[in-house]
Image 1: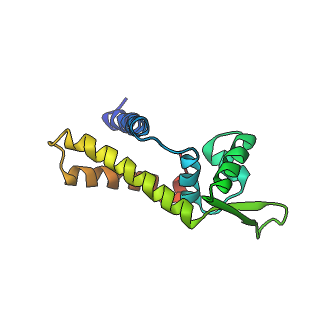
Image 2: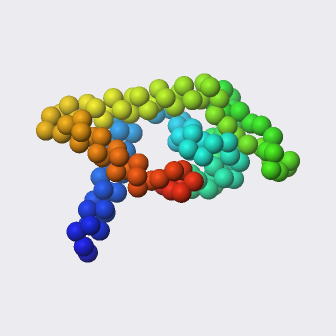
Amino acid sequence: MSTDVELASDLVTYAARLVRAVRRSVDLPAGTRLLSILDELGPSTVTALAAADRTAQPTTTAAVRDLLERGLVDKRPNPQDARSTLVALTDTGRAELARVRRRNGEAVAARLDAHPTHTAEDLATAVAVLRDLLGPPSEGGPL
């Protein structure tokens, strides 16, 4: 394996470990992942959400039902297909997602505080690399 491939593999490994560590330290409400996918993709069918989340459609349907009851998403007619509906974030859902992301940021900031050798510039570089690798949502899609 080349050094670039090894480093790229390490990037994926450590990014995934960081996400898991943050999830363990922050009590995420149910449905947060779907809110994030909707934020990335925009209004989507349950089928598209299930595919993006790599879950079964009945599982996604139940999760969407819970988010609807909590007022975090709404359903609207699908202008492309009158037989289906689109699930979309509500203002309350956007606010909840922003709250969760802020808490995630606080958890990562606390880890950074424990390692003062890393600067704000290091963090900005890491964010820039990940953003560039993912590209616009239509190119990269959810992982």
